[in-house]
Length: 258
Image (cartoon, rainbow, N blue to C red; front, side):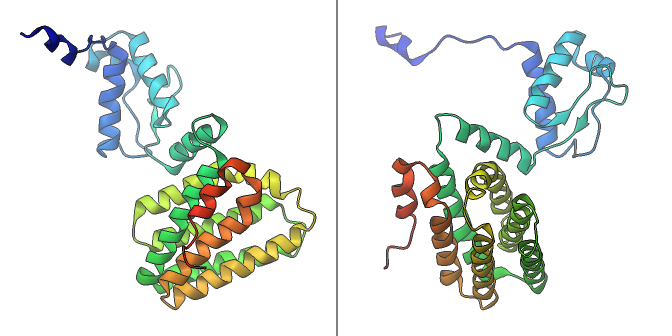
């Protein structure tokens, strides 16, 4: 072996038993062998199957619960409940990113601009009548909420369901998953900022008008217009609320054409 060949390798880090147990269970969950709502074997059974101690099994279950894949209580005779992969897992991760120095709120809003634009474009081409009905229902709900002392959170939920209907109409399940996760990750921060707007009712009316325009574009099959509406509305709503240094990112995601 040449003298410099040693640079090709790195020291091996030992893997603890609980990590192997967690990995095997996670693989079975992701493969669909353990669907959401099902139960893992009880702790004692897992101890026997894996040939490890109870503390090892409990640590593996703790890791899986932290990842949002299961709901576990020590000693539960029914076994841990499988939650599987859900938007909650992703939205929690995105939420942690916005609270850390890894990603900014502006970057998250820009990500939503990209997602919404593509979802709108695809939905305009691929939607069915049932999809349009779901969108109309959420707009009607938003209209009802804007006329009274309803909370901004309830209005925001209807907004999220409208965009989820669009994402699912696009035919891509990942777009729907990401659309929900991004909205949930950013909604708390945005709600606090918008709650300070002097005329919340006017803001809600402007939002409803935008949703009507998007619905009309999708129903007409006008993908480019639907995509442009998604990008421009998010920029108008949120640009002034994100970090000043990230506003250029949002502007860069707008159409190149004036």
